[in-house]
Amino acid sequence: MDISGKIIQFLPVQSGQGKNGTWKKQEFILETGDQYPKKVCIAVWGDKIDMGSFKTGDLVDVSFDVESREYNGRWYTDVKAWKMGKKGGASGPDTSASYNDVQGTSFTASSGGDDDLPF
Image 1 (cartoon, helix red, strand yellow):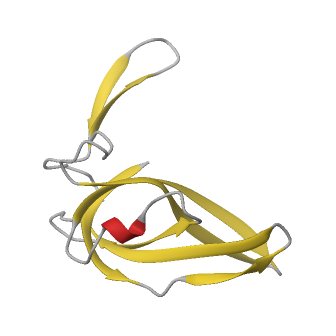
Image 2 (tube, rainbow, N blue to C red):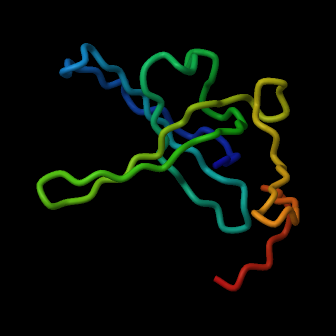
């Protein structure tokens, strides 16, 4: 999945020791530029993305996965970035993508523009 927006805050870096060794997580808050802006907390695990090249106020494109897990009867959901680039930069993901369904019919989805959603 992809999302675009402005970085409005960086949270402190978290690290610790796990069964597979030392881990590090950097979270940041992204605000979308929609008519009704949303704020999303996104995590970057390890050193997959150089977070030092981004600063508060940067417009970015982020590719991410959403994952939920259960612990002691409660469910926790993470939004984990796996690719990130400054908006309009060569390293950022394309904001429109073509998808093909099982029967070969294709359509184009775009992350920008005026969406007329019923909710």
